Amino acid sequence: MLTSQTTEHRCPCGSRKPFAFCCEPYIEGQKLAPTAEQLMRSRYTAFALGAIDYLIDTTAPEKRDAIDRAIIAEQIQFTTWTGLTILNKEAGHKDDSQGMVEFEASFETEEDQCVLHECSNFYAKDGKWFYLDGNVEVRSIA
Image (cartoon, rainbow, N blue to C red; front, side, top):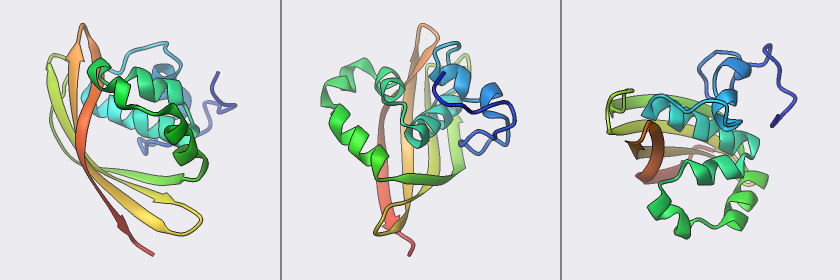
């Protein structure tokens, strides 16, 4: 188990569901995220909880060579994720092969409070969703 979270703790992804009934089964490998949005939410939760393996495993295989585990670990260590808001989504349902999720994720570092705005692209292969890429903008709110 990734954390000591119980059914009483709300999931970091903002769904208002208990962690155990939301992103935990995906992060722990018990289930596959059924939609692009749920994969995006579970990846946000993985960033919040430090589940680096899940972040790598859910990145498109053709993009994994560009991933630096040490950089992700450092980002996780110095970042506190404080909120997620879904702004828009296109396709990305169970029977789709592609999807886009636009979101804002709030976070804090020692120096700043920021919002990450991203339009993330996903694709599904053999029933498994992958993060492909995204257009990212980070702005300070402090």
